[in-house]
Image 1: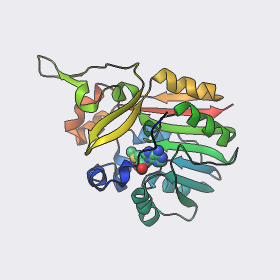
Image 2: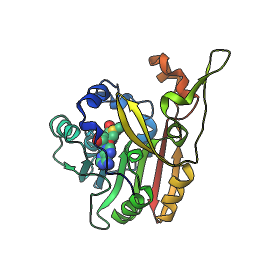
Image 3: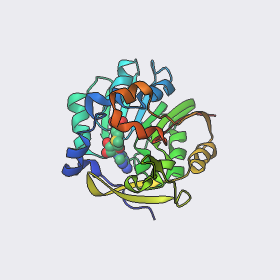
Image 4: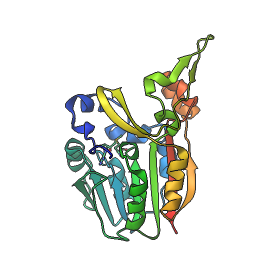
Length: 247
Ligand SMILES: C[S@@+](CC[C@H](N)C(=O)[O-])C[C@H]1O[C@@H](n2cnc3c(N)ncnc32)[C@H](O)[C@@H]1O
């Protein structure tokens, strides 16, 4: 049985750490994979959009400013939603507190479902993508980013090994052992779920979705000029981005 959905973003210690990240708040557009994600989004003019794990609401608001008719942001964290409601409000965006695993919508309710870096917190991926497929209109689109399976297979502080020459190498291991990984990220006990690329891609196919694009971004040279301490991030992808269409 999967565990109860975790709500680590309401933990004051976790949020104190997470809010120091550049991608938090207004810095979301400076995230290394931001341009790749935006490039996957379809034209949202007049569209009804669902953002799963919307966090502080930057993307939800962005989509409304791009002409979306309605955006619903769903998140389990009251603290993140408080930020969304106070700092990233928009007349066509509403925020709903719910776990992704439990929220319900009518069939064909949305033209686009987006989710940025939230699906690796969800246990039952197959069930989730089947629900997303049901919520989509015919030819509706889902775009998501998640932590990459090459990254989630190991705990972040166990994956790097140092070679004799001093340079780092990512030692992939336990790739096929799908399931929860408890890591220390600002606080102990942050729970993420590892699954293989095959599980993720086949889950979409089995839900009746057609995969249109898969992106494994690594930081660009320009981004690394501004973040020189992150140069090892080119050695393996940290994120996986997908766009799929119903039908
Ligand atoms: C890494 S943050 C990303 C937030 C936002 N999408 C962004 O790109 O800035 C992950 C978000 O997913 C939310 N989350 C994690 N597990 C969740 C769940 N089971 N149900 C709903 N939201 C969840 C967290 O509260 C957090 O706001």
